[in-house]
Amino acid sequence: MNIIAVETITDVTPPVAYDYLINEGFTTIVDKEVGYDGKVYSDIQQATALGGLTHGVTKLEITAAYAGIANMGEYIPPVFYDRVYDHDGNLVIDNRDPSERSHRMCKKTTAWQLIDAMKDVVTSGTGTRAKMQSGIKCAGKTGTTSNSYDLWFCGMTPYYTASVWFGYDSNITVNTNNHKDMWRDIMDAIAQKEGHSPDKDWDQPDGLEKTTVCKMTGLLPTSGCPTCTDWCDKDHVPKKRCKGHTNSIRICNESHMKATNTCPDTTEYPITYDDQGNMTILGAPFEYDQNIFTTPCPIHPEAEGGLGIEAWADTGGVISNVPEFQEGDDVTFYITANPGYVISDVKVDGNSVGPVSQYTFKAVRGPHTIYAYFTATGEGGNPPPDPNTEAPTEAPTEAPTEAPTEAPPPDGGGGDGG
Ligand SMILES: [Zn+2]
Ligand SMILES: [Zn+2]
Image 1 (cartoon, rainbow, N blue to C red):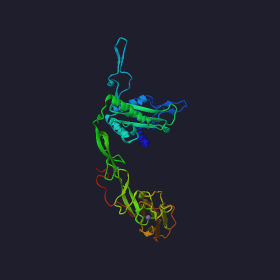
Image 2 (spheres, rainbow, N blue to C red):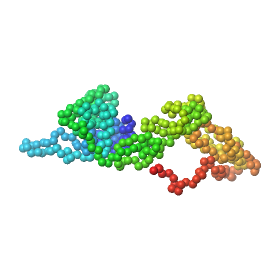
Image 3 (spheres, rainbow, N blue to C red):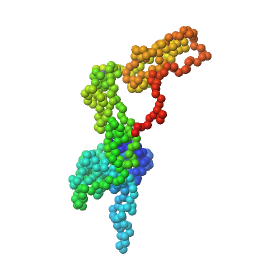
Image 4 (tube, rainbow, N blue to C red):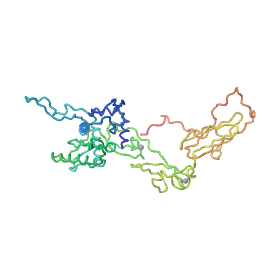
């Protein structure tokens, strides 16, 4: 799951993520610092997403940042007193109105989505121990450093935000849920004392839209896409549609398992995915389980070097070299007769395909042979090559085997379909 955080910081770029942290009130992160070892340290890097920081953060500042989320994206710097009077009783500092020192650290919609996601942590994720007994709505996030030296729980109710850090000054592994229990018990006690209501919840701001997307691409789904539905900022609802998942599997008709390169009789079936990512073979006239996607046919074992293509030309001409290719690629060969010769026949896997100058193996999955044969035309016999004449360079005259037979549509085709 940490991979998702690293992919996200990579996506938004570390400098943007760093600016957000500054805006969220963190003062201990560094953009560039030369350590005692002479190395340059910076928190503008991907490990920042996982808390791999030069100096770390303080409990006060991380709690203030979470409070900013709980406050729907409005950050309020924490203070320890609300009024200061001088000895004459004049009010010299008044902190009672937080709006005088607050600023926006993220959009309301972003804050609400974060709270919504962090509610799941407490109801079904790693923080279920922190779920409040009083039924007060709460959301939060657990955190664990390497070797469980530090345990964190930062959480919020619609009333208060609090964080618990659990560990030792010297790094010692601590395997416990005490930090979550502690958070829950303190917050339950406060809720009881202050008479908090289990009905109070964060108000959903305007600008969110319930959106269904393709789970694999995040784009608008096409039939056959595995989908998920959640709240999305109206400005970020995807506009492009998923092109669909046209994956297929080739099945041995004898064993009804994944075909190898030696299965003599095979059928290719399209595959679809369900919400869990399980695959279904469309139109399969046989029973199967998910092993079929990984287990090769046991009757016809895969042949060694099975992808090899043997290309050979008789006297009187040449055939192009076998190119580098991978399973499933199309592989094309060109046959050229020498001066005084014409192509008489080309045999593909032992079968004549006629005197073609070009042949394409479609979606190569097994061994093939292609042999080219030539006949002398008798015109000038077999003359020695004239050093003053270049070898013939004209293109082969036969049409390619897969020549398009229709003109392209007037709009050029393509488009991403609806
Ligand atoms: Zn899709
Ligand atoms: Zn087979």
